[in-house]
Length: 285
Image (cartoon, rainbow, N blue to C red):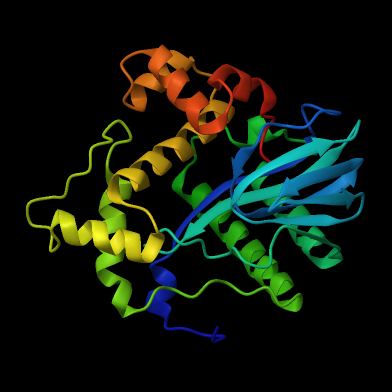
């Protein structure tokens, strides 16, 4: 990948900060369910972490950092494990993650750990410990405080990317011009409410249903209906673990009239019920 691209391409990134926390993990000694995780990094300040991802098992000992790729994984924590963690989402308009290849590795970086501690102090203002649940709660901020927080994350992200470059891990390039129609199609599909599983296109869309189906098959290997189904399943996995609300309410937001239909659908795709998945899915790290 070229080291630089035009600024307009970087501005097209969809970027969202999810958390920075420092504290003990909630569940130790058992493997979590297979849960969706965003890209990010966590430092093991005490204890040990084991990760199962990409058909590999990675041991992350104390003093090491784990650089996480977006996707599905399981994790296990030793007793009294404490983490320092940052999570975020960053994708190109077609949904391709900015960071994907070369990740799911455990390395040491004293410089990035210092930068992450600085970020934690800047965001959490004097606190010494903040749990994942606390860090992901919605917070009301004045605009100046929001700007300062964004600036702190931006400084950290530059150090994060520099650390990855030291280990020859590069961002994914944006799609070329030939992907413009695909980008438009994926953006439309991703903007649809999750409870609408039937593929449709807006009246003025520059593609017909047949051509849209062909493009998705060509570039992503799935059709329109399968794309929407996969998107809905990813949302279900994430919300079951992250949200303490009732599964009946979640089923309704995903387009299921009855909780039993949602349970059967989720079990068919994952092999477990939503309640079992929630019980086995510890917080993301």
